[in-house]
Image 1: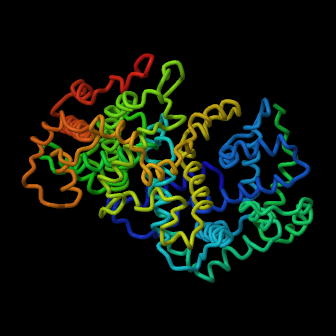
Image 2: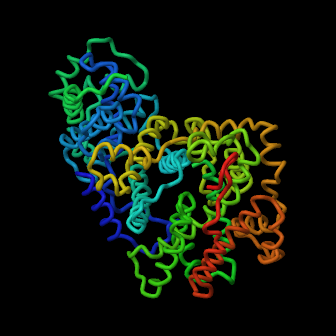
Image 3: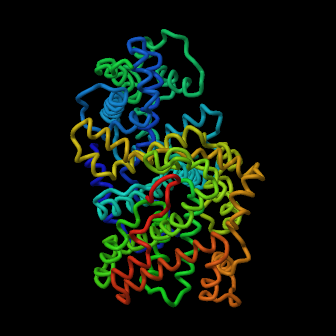
Amino acid sequence: MNRRKFAYLSALASAATATVRGEKTAAPAARIPEAAGLIAEMIFLDDCVRLAMYDTELSNTEKTALTAHPDFVRNGALSPPASGEKTGEKFALAAGRICSEMLNRHRQPNSPEARLYQDIALMRDVSAKAGCDPAKRAPVADLLDTVHVRRRLGLHTLNPDEDIHHWLEGIITWWRDERELRSAIAAAYTSPDAAKMHEFVSGFYNPSDPIIRVARSFEFAQVTPPGILPSALAQARQGSQYARAMVEAVESLRKLTKPLEK
Amino acid sequence: MSEYITHTAVFEDCARLAILSPAVCAPFKTVFKKHWEIASLGTLTRSGDKYTVQLLEYCRDRWPTHRPGDFLEEKLAYTLGWRCHNAADRHFKPIYRELEPEHYANEAAHRGDPDERDVSDVRIYHDVIVYTEVYDRGRRAGSPVSPYLVQDNLSGHPAATAVAVTPIETAMGAVIQRTLLNLQSFTTKETGSDAWVKRFETRLQDYYVDIHRYARAVDDPQSELLRRFILANNFYDRRDPIIRLARALQADATHSDLDLETALAQAEKQSQYAQTLRQGYFYLEASSKFFERKIDEEELRHRLDLGTAHYKPLGGTAQ
């Protein structure tokens, strides 16, 4: 799904369902927003950067460009192909663009509901790795709402676009989508439907894939012995879609034009 | 944003005062009631002065024929919340500079507001007092902020044993940034990579407030900072009639001993928070009069302080 299609479908879906209901008493989500799947994508991008730290074929300048500019990596998917001077920022943008592309190329199925369950699978795996029990019944919706407020408190004030009517319709849609997505995640997080997990996640993500274990361990400061990356990459070719996307992302990063040394 | 809690509270209190007031038109009350959260989002948005008049005019002219799904009610709600942001900004930005001048020293020599790079302590302390006084630290019914809001890793939250807060917060935060960036038209219109990067660096919504500073201010407030930022300039006085009325409305309690007009008149010389509510309410009332065609654009601009500076940078010229 490209960015124009994302924006269009998102606005269209919300316009079609917009009602005069009270904002404070919204019912649980009946519609899964197009933004479903972005949590998995953000975790994937961070995982690719973690793997890159092990890659002996990338220079320290390239590795530093990735870690110094995480926002560029995470938003590279929106950027146009780079030209001109190859700065660390442009390298990070290009890396993010190509990694997002690899994930979306491999992601199957790719419906909003499938992506929702893929988000949940990633969240559950990360939480389990952190020592949490994702199956424990808990007020997850309230926690996700609180996290959302905390993140918005940490942000600068919202910055309107010059096309004010388009932006206002977008921000109103964004708000509803975010709320409905949190609600949909929370509804399934602790006890996701087994049949849907099988249908949407079993081929997509396998936490046992060695390459995923390398990235996930690194996330929690458990360092894998040097030299393990080549064998993990080789095994990943027969692994889950997420693992295969990681292999292609790593290989693509090696081919990117190197950033200038500073 | 820093002042998130203060701006949200100012909006909520002003909206309840507007709903109570016979001087505010019915469409405003309708959109507040139906689109409270959308209006609340408006109070967290910059550049309100630039768009208020055109949006009020747009909504006013189309109101008689508006229909569900055309975004008109939501746009009006957003615009009204936005005015409350401007009331709070206009009142507090000069005060921040007066109370913590060391943070803003030489700001005229640098481009932009120092708080864009690093938040001043005074902003955080104001938020903490509002968190306590207005929302009882998240325990008050209907509070838009949680009792766990400023805890490290939300460690006390009952779902924190099921969800790993730190990594999920990072991923959700990145999704918020991406989806907000996707609303900026340059992301699709700008095709040159150098120009795109330049726009990206100015339009990306950065994370710049460390929530842990809030935690420290809540758990271990510094007496000197409370004295300087809260007591010395009478930031909040729960005895002020306008604040008592706002709290009664918030709790859906009786308030027969409190008259809105009298409370507004008294607020002019009362606590800073009371003065801000007064300013925010009058912005809404003026907007209402314009919406009902009782005042013209020139008078609206005058009453909304449009075209006047929010603050004077220390050591420089007005912004």
